[in-house]
Image (cartoon, rainbow, N blue to C red; front, top):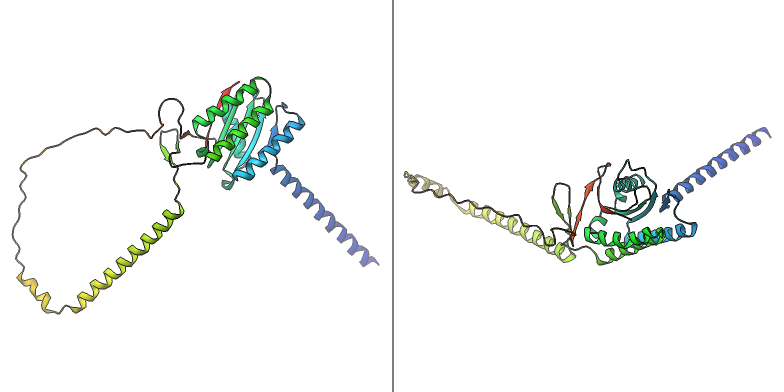
Length: 280
């Protein structure tokens, strides 16, 4: 009887431990599924639930993250930095770098977009300015939920337009990084060219070795007939021409918004972010 009681007690503790692990495990998953962080308390419960659904839909369609943040900052940190750092802390892994963080900072009266990963290419500077212009009107009227909904829907429109070879990033040093992807036909053409080149090199080397085998020792005796003559090069004239080559910016790069360009910066985490902010 005592043995049975001890076995039953051990089984009870094992089941209890298993249940606790399952509980905390589920809690962690639900925490990761949170999209809206209303730290400034400016959204209602229904608005938060609707925004959660919109962010989830964005993530399912784009395979990129969308997170919403509200803050009432003191101004000791720039609003753009707050959005960048929040995204990097929520998604620290490199596999999760693709996404967008939307912030309304009530302390500094700023509305902010922070892009990361591939979304830096999808949302150019001009598109971000357009989104902020539209959303800031709602934020100024106190309709913060509609401001976020507008930013999500317009970000989806930018995603639907896609990324072309004309899209590029401009970092803090002015370096331009073009977006480039190979199509299926280009990859097939590259593979075929590589195979043909390898075959030509292979048969060329084999042919050269066959010729060497057919040559007799008499051919090497002809080296004695070679006569070496002195040759001199005389410099007649020297002419040096200098020419300044202008650095032409890519199409659309210039003053104001850029149609295909996205200005990026390095956040405190070391990760590259695009985005922008606007007062409301």
